Amino acid sequence: MPRLPAFPALRRRVDRWAGSPRALDVVAALFAFGLMLLDVPGLARADNSLTGVTATLVLAGGAATLVLRRRLPWLPYAVALGLMGWLHELTMIQFALYSIGRYRGRRAAVLATLLYVAVAYGYFLTPGWPAEHGETVSDFLSLVVPIGVLAAGVGIAAYRQDLVRALEVQRREAAARQAVQEERISVGRDVHDLVGRELTVLAVRAEVLAVRAGGEAHQKDFEELADTARRAHLMLNETIVRRADRGAATPGLEGLAELAGETERMGSPVALTVAEEAKALSPLRQAAVHRVVRECLTNAAKHAPGLPVTVAITVEGAGLRIEVRNPLPKSPPDPAPVSTGTGLFSMEERVTSMGGTLRARREDGAYVVTATLPTGLAS
Image 1 (cartoon, rainbow, N blue to C red):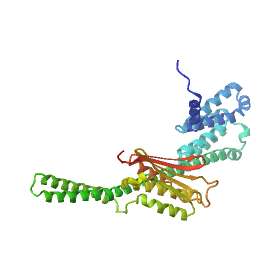
Image 2 (image 1 turned 45 degrees about the vertical axis):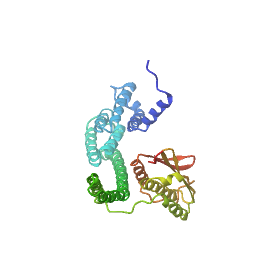
Image 3 (image 1 turned 180 degrees about the horizontal axis):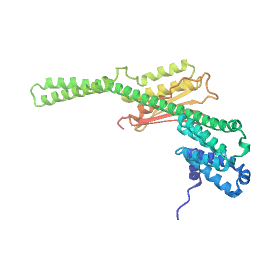
Image 4 (image 1 turned 30 degrees about the vertical axis):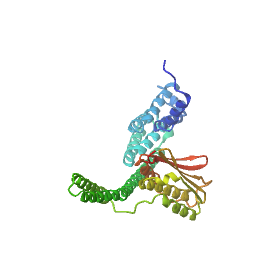
């Protein structure tokens, strides 16, 4: 016998569905049906072929097509035109025109509105059109045209808002990708500056050993080792230096005190704690620590000015832990800080490129950033 889902899991599913586009479509269909129900008594009296029950069923079937308004907005539109001619029902057409404007844009909405007015005018010319919907052409137009134009216009406005939001999302994604790319270039520069020097030392020492070997059996091996180091250095230059302009390497742990001082001069006190074991980290890992702390202090100064910041760098076994914590302000700073929103992506790229993890969260009235990465030190 299959087990029923636990209540928390069921609630999460319901919450996800409630925020989905399909739920909004269902709500729109129910809302349209509710408005049309108000016309059921009049519809049953005006058309002897329907009773209150059958009219309700017909309107429910028409409103149900609004569930498909995103993928097939022309379907509820066609149904609305049919209901308008058969039952003289004008509520459904408003939802249909809005849906076309919202999900197909201005041209489709204008075309649908013109077609609606033309079809409605054809209905007006046929015998049996209710007098309350217009005895003269001017009365008819003053009723039908505003309904269509307003519904379609609101739909077009919503369509444009959707486009603006989509473009904003694309802009943020592009900015995030750019931040990640810049951070990768920065990591590459650090690798070049730190590893390139070691390759140069290796090549020079191998050449010295080859000279000292002077005809001995290992002279050729030392020469090959020196040549390999030079080729590795050349490949490093090809892949990094030619792809980006050279920049200064990121400082290490020795630069953290200066960062803290700069933040304090901006009005935010900094309590900095660095474990003694962390000073044995490789220059590349120290550069990662400096990068994370710098970004965190910058964000704290912008979003929580004047509030204290705690920076703790500890070594726990084979792992390095960086934690930066600052209280959340009671109200947003005025004026609002200028931020591209890509700093977190840059920090995460720097940490994950070295096999670590980064997490930013709100915790007990504070904003906390925690980064962990392997120390690379022998246990």
